[in-house]
Image (tube, rainbow, N blue to C red):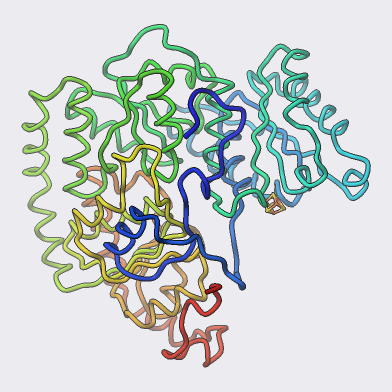
Length: 485
Ligand code: SF4
């Protein structure tokens, strides 16, 4: 990774040597990544896809007193309404705050692609400043603004001088990276440049937690060793974001989200990154707590806290494990978060028979943080691991062939893949629900409830006609037929 503050982030294909296709087992993925043998892969047919601009906007738009100007056609900006509703809820959950829409789209038109859109952008930034009185303005770019070559960086610098607040260009043109999580890095880089400040004092009991929206599950977990979470970056103010350099250490709900930011905080401000898997599952939560305790000088109390938590959850965990004996689960989610879910499922006594992730970072910003390796250590060699940039037409084939008892997904619209095949499924939309010791039980209860409705799912399957041809669904057809060899 480049050292120091940067105007733009290198895309994940280059920085983390990210890949988009793989079919094998978990060990093969870890070893192939270490030896750099695996290639990114190119699909010559895609059923759907994501764009890094969506990930970037989602993050910067969630800062309470910032404004976002999306320099794009209106279609690229359409997802903002979902972010608005999510942020409103999260702001309420986290301290009864109000979240207001602070966004403008330049709505690039055909004529702008011929004559240039920079004047329109200047006008939009001015308008955002007048309407919202923000502390920072983030300008997000798009394929259209990139293709016509609008110099957004220079305009942002000019407007910073003119308005007297930071105006920062978040370079996240969809075509620039095939890995949509590059957008997370672009947005964190913007926050790092525009909002984060050197520490005024150190807060030795504060732990940075980079996450999405979610319930407050880190407070009870950290409280066991006398610490408190600093949730970042959704629904925080610019002033609060500046304080992340005062924390004792940083962690995240998954490395896919915040590996770039945690590493930069360590490099630039000496805030150490927790070198352990995120606290999902029994083994990983123990490991994470010990790593946090080591960084916050709490060695003497952490073992007693872990013992007491194990004793507390044991009766219910034993009963869940009894229920899940012999049952098989398949996980379908983003790279590191899929490993988190597999870790919890394994500790609940489910057999993890397969995992599909949307991409895989072969390298990590910090080589000591490697969730795929942690996965093999904790769960063993998961026999069916694939990477397929969110392509349902492939996943239905994996599910049909492996016939899991349960499907665990992270993103909207994917649980239905299980329903259509008669497989109970849960969408783990709230990333924080399965965190820590209580999170293990919580996910276990939800999976159990869902499995008890088996008949409902069988009925779904009975009345569903999949849109795929017999040729595609045949066992002889390779699910990776549309990946260029
Ligand atoms: S930035 Fe490009 S890829 Fe992303 S939504 Fe807009 S047009 Fe699509």
